[in-house]
Image (cartoon, rainbow, N blue to C red):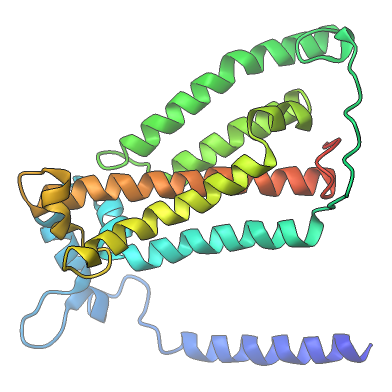
Length: 264
């Protein structure tokens, strides 16, 4: 009881401080706010600079992608780290590690993915047709995020959802046979390393961390602007790897209570 009272007091104090701070925010849509009106002396606001100069700086038509992967690259990298940390936290809490794994239960032909009752045949066959299309569209979303809505987070969610769909249509072991535990943990780490690797490479070449323009000699581009464009595609691939694998890892552990055996 005492713990609940202390938790309630902590939440009440934190909420009061947040509500007090909201009063200092400018009104929604206020054209005179610092984000919209700029600063004294004629300097443009951040929003105005992004809108007018983004394409000149990055050669990326999609303003959202240029902001997320370039101007706000630090933030996006650590957002990806937060996704990774969340998945690892769920793994640490739920995963049941045993010294001897239970042998898989042999399945009869009637229990397999596309055999047995009519419902299983329909669901299994439909998923076998739909899942490759989902994954192909996910790759398009990742690669075309420079020019249309999309990017690493959206494409990664689509890839992760395709494996979850397989687990729901068949069973968790079928999905894990395509993307098992060692591989999804390994790929999640590789995604983080790809993103951070672009930043470290920029430093090696004499630039700042995630200052993609200095990668022009390495990427063989016409100018630093195209180097920034190509580098953003690279970091988006890293984001997609981490998001997709962690998404599936979270589902696998929650659905099976950490055993990775039965699932839903």
